[in-house]
Length: 518
Image (cartoon, rainbow, N blue to C red):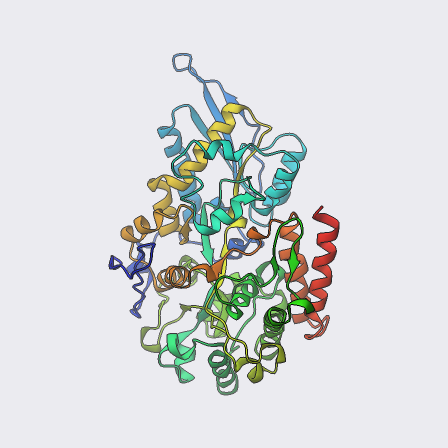
């Protein structure tokens, strides 16, 4: 079991991140329902594999004949339920477990991939046939704006756990301008640096935590790898849906959880990007945009502008990619490629290892040739996914179905029979309810990447934060995915220059806010 020694942090989470080799056999018994390699970008809301895309049948009250009692059917639309074979089976059996514990309800589980769920959900809502509960993500804000969601605050006020026991990221995204529009995220994941130990040890790295702590150190090592080894030293996951890698390491130019992009009141926000009135912060944010494009241009493959993170495990395990900045807690994605993959440093012989994003240091700007970053420094940090996995209850279903949807949402957050196997075994992630983290870590021996991602979240605190949730602007998703990510992706593809990219991002964000944030 993982060490239960405390480290003085308020969460009581231990930070045991030893270098021992971790294989799937150490972590869990391998089954024929092993995780598929695809759909991992779905953590960030991008397209993924799996799912049947089906809408399911009509919701409604299912007539029961047990002594005249009535069973209410709760339609539940989920993409997470088809991330891989293991989690799909777990969701299916868990819906039966929920029904057995809540005798007046049964669940009609409907699924769609993360690439299809928004269109599927929109079609159902527009046709007047919404599910009772759905993994609506940022799209839920539009339903909230249109008064199509239930009053979530009225449900939460009757519990001892919500919203206070949600993770910090869950609390950030469940509230919008003082109102609760969602139950929070059922699970969170964070972004980190991922390296191939075999490659980095060959380049002279002996202690990765110390030798790759800053962007200058990381950059110098990439240069050595690029010059001395036949491998892609650094691959940017530059497809717009996976450029959350930038969201993560942009924070490393700051300290104290400072938002690199948008600040202030949601009705009248201040955009940091290319803002000459915020010169020091503009330099950090603009500089990291330029660094993202520059690193891709210097080290990444020609496919990087369209590269999704789900492609990386096979490339890294086969020795074609040495590092990337979209490393997640999910070990199953690596074991699905090679069940004997060695996760962790393993004396420099490991196949994959997760580390904190490097922190900005004063010399990096001069080293990489980006004046904006010269003399600036920051702290380790990253992006925490929360908005993408928000679950919402719809108002255009019966009161009984709304109550059942809330009961189901609480089950997905609170019941150990669902939570622990779901996020500790089948799809490694941070439980959406903060107190469940200790229970999960007591239950399982965790692979290095999962353990380290949790340690990063604890040690660097508010530097690991949700991007977009705290902005309280209506067009949060298009600003994140289109105005920021797509614009940077276009720069990686050579459609516009590195230096002009921040101003293009700013113009698009300001236009979006003017048109859609009234």
